[in-house]
Amino acid sequence: MKVTLEEIDLLRKRANVSYEDAKEALAKFEGDMVEALVYLEKENKINHKKKCESKSQFISKVKSIIKKGNRTKFIIKNDESVVLNIPITIVILLTIFTTPFVIIGLIAAILTKHKISIEKPEGGSVEKVNKVFDKMTSTVNDITSECD
Image (cartoon, rainbow, N blue to C red; front, side, top):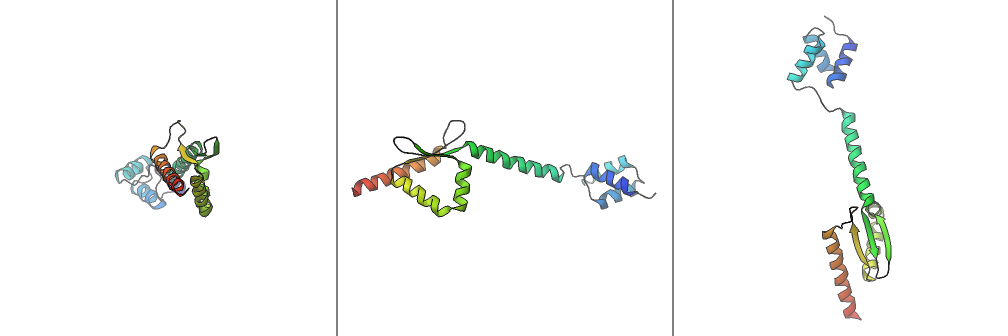
């Protein structure tokens, strides 16, 4: 029995296999779609995840990371008020594209005794990062106090 292109296309859609695998399975079982599917399954040739599904999963993961980054805030404050409060996503983009300016800005903030912190959307803070920022600030404050 000759296998038609329509049958091959149908099997490809159902099993997410190559034309070659679909044609081989249909030819082996004389066009019997069920037997061809069973055969492909036994041979572990059926791809359960389609490419578009994995792409959409990747895109949804990236969107999730960006949303979380937008809710996590990078904050610089002095004794009186908040000087800068922006999403961490913007900080990352600025760091990628304008690294020297970001470094100069951070050094300037520390030298002028500003407090730098990162706050999570749940109201908590990123303890390890904030401890590093606090240590840097206090060390610079100690050094500048000695020089005065």
